[in-house]
Length: 84
Image (cartoon, rainbow, N blue to C red; front, side, top):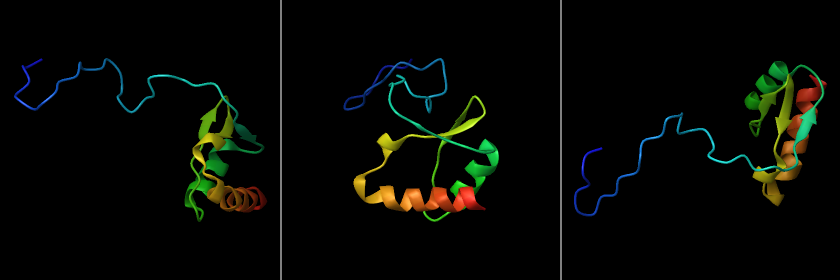
């Protein structure tokens, strides 16, 4: 690693993708029924777009990422995606 110039900080390079979380925090998730890939596609294309993660063949939504004002809109988007 090159030395830092004045006013510049250097951090060590990561041996993994920097977009991956450094720490997995346990917490609640909502597992949606149905085909995970299909639901994920429908939710991403919805209004508002809803992004989840697929794990063990299930689409998981993390409610910790929502503020109180977004809950009703996400619930409606999920209902539309499940009904399609």
